[in-house]
Figure (tube, rainbow, N blue to C red):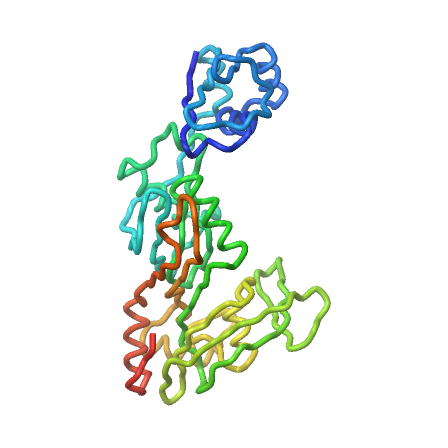
Length: 327
């Protein structure tokens, strides 16, 4: 017999969903049969799988060790170890300054993603165990393109993950990006367009007017300072589409410097030769949380910022001539 005590990361879900995570190799028919035969019980009583789990509930599996091992399939833990630039951390949430070049989520590539570094960090610090990992995987709630740096929010617990996901989904959290673009921009603007995604090539096209299959987009920007040929912008996404900032600014003739997908190759080559710049100068530098209650009430109304990468800072210092930079 194996006994599992329900913790905060498992509470709130249906028993059958929990058993599906606990026994990923078991057919659903087998799980329901074991429930009917009381080989799986909840708090010592027969259950049908529809029950909502609560903290400190006890789930008992009256299986042999061989059967349990067969259907649990072992726990494959994908993790990486290294330094995370942590901006903020509490028991539910972790805010990280992701470097350019790192994937936000696993994609099957050999390079480890931020999620794998997050998992390694939680294991290394004793905040996550192999037993807990069987039924809950920490995850990020906002994704940045591989070559975009800046703030990524991660849920360390189910409560943190659910509440963070909610505020990102309903756009009540405000996200601000900093980027260096080609050209001189002196006025704050909110630009609109229509974005069409090419799933096959993972690219998007922005149109000024309605286009079949294209989704409406809005991007707000505020010039912070400029040099002879470039402008430092703070950008806020009114809508949040794939590659929106990069493609939208490129469509107006002000591509993000270093952007090899939507940028200007001649301009990018100039910055590569001068600074060895290999990625776009786009950085998620600030987020502002809405008023919140419950487990994340301590984040209510707070603002967090992520420092610009060193190379971004150097290029900004060299290329921006105005003395006042309002970050």
